[in-house]
Image (cartoon, rainbow over all chains, first blue to last red; front, side):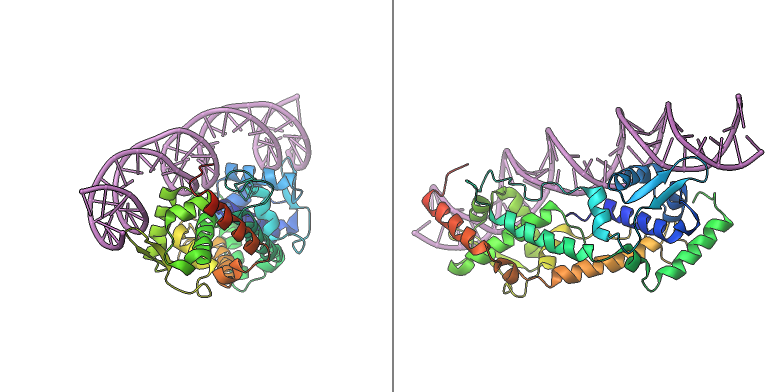
Length: 154
Length: 154
DNA sequence: TGATTCCCGAGTAATTCAGTTGGTTTTAGT
DNA sequence: ACTAAAACCAACTGAATTACTCGGGAATCA
């Protein structure tokens, strides 16, 4: 498992979606507006999220994305895995410095650590993430700002 | 906090160092040999580890690196932080989509998550990491192989 | 003196990041 | 039927990062 800025974008966008899907699907333009992320970049991220079955998109006016599971059932690890698709974590692939079929130090080591991190992030759901202290206030503030001047390009 | 392959290299190298420093300092050529990492790349990593006070280098024949703290006192987070130096985690810096002095959703959100990940990795010491089940056997195997044919370039 | 090691800086091919551009469907509202 | 809104898709791009290499010092020991 890798932790990159792309993963952050995805988690942020998914949380935004979770917080706003009460009134039907949420369009990417809304999320892009609220979170300050490029819409086309969001499209790429949501393409992967869709392929993983985390979201579902409906086309046409009034369309957008919906979560395919409840916020309790989607973990941070799910989202990060979807967009970051782990690269062959061990890099040695049984070759190079570890000969035979015995695996090298790096392999077991990082595999273990990676498992622990995944378990950790797997236990944080979008619901829990959205339920933090200060987030609600900020959400309301963002909603307000978005309603007042929806097409203001900052 | 980011999790990249560079962090893995550093953690692996530090663990290798921890497992072999019983007989004086460990040279980078040994670590490079055992772990299959470029020596020059290790030099760059250890330069950062040294600046963070995690290791100390002694020059000349028989020289190498030593840990400046005990393996119990060095966490995985310490090592990763040393080589990956966190880039301004929030990316918004109080500007762009969050105006005024109020911070954006991303900011609090990822700051919280990042803190939790850091706490998690901060609680895993090199000692614990090296004490895992299968690692010792592999270590012995690698030692043996290294003694038998130390200069074999695979 | 010479070998061994750390130390340092510059360069580099490949890859990834975070987009942009330019479309094509699909659907809703008129 | 027409238009606009939205998802969808693929290709391209500048900038940054990665994982090195290369070429040298500088300290230390035999």
